[in-house]
Image (cartoon, rainbow, N blue to C red; front, side, top):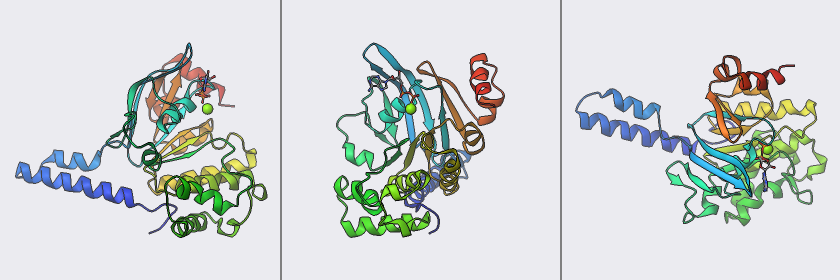
Length: 285
Ligand code: ADP
Ligand code: MG
C-alpha cells in the first residue's frame, strides 16, 4: 500500500463493480458491452437532487443537482455568498436541507432515520480555518474525533494517525501544538485528520483562503497527491488556476443554482454565458 490514503473502499467498490459486470455478462450469455459500462461507471460517490435551503427569507440553494463520481475531483466555484459552504454543510449534515435529496453512495443521507455519525465517518471535511484545537497536540487533534465520535480504541487511532502524519512528512510534529506549525502545516494536519476514517468523499471548503500566499502551494500539492491516489474530492476554492489544472470538473454556482457544470476548459475557457465569462475574467489578473 502506498500513498496518503489506503484504498480499501475503492478496492471494494471495484470488486463489486466487476462482480456486477461478470453477472451481467453471464446473464447475457456472451460478452455484453453494457457489462463494461458497469465497471467504467460505478454509482456516484455523491449525488444531489433538487437540494433547497433557505435561511429565513433568503433562499441560498434553489434546486441544486449534480454528481461526483468515484475518483473525481470537482471544484465548486462561485462568488462569495453563492452558497458553496451551505451546500457543503448540507452534505456534511451540519445543515438540514429544506427539500431535495443527497445520496452518499446508496445512502440517502437526508433521511433522518440514518445514523448521522456513521454518515460523517464516511465524509472527511476541512474548512478554511480554525480546524485544530490550539490546546491539543497534533496527535490528539488528529485522533480526537475517531476516539470520541467514532469510538475507536486509542491505540488504533494513534497508529492510524501516525501513519497518516508519516505519509505527509509530519510525524516529527506529532507532539507539537498547532501554534508551533505554519498555517500550511496546520491545514495539512487537518487534511490528515479528515482522512482518519478512510472516507469515501473529502470535502474541502476554501482550505487555502486564510493562508499566507507562500503557504498555499504546499497544501494544494497535497490535494494533487490525494487526487493521484484516487481520492474523491469536492472542493470549494478561489484558486482558479489550480481548479483549471487539477479539477476533473467545475461546478459553478450563481444565484442559488448551478450556472455551469463541465470540464475546466468548457466552463472556464469556452462558456458562451456572459456572466460566466465575466466571473472568470475577474480572476484572470
Ligand atoms: P459561500 O460559501 O459561497 O461564500 P455561504 O454558503 O457561506 O456562501 O453563504 C450563502 C448565503 O447564505 C449568504 O448570504 C450567507 O449570508 C447566508 N448564510 C449562510 N449561513 C447562514 C446562517 N447560518 N444563517 C443565515 N444566513 C446564512
Ligand atoms: Mg464559503
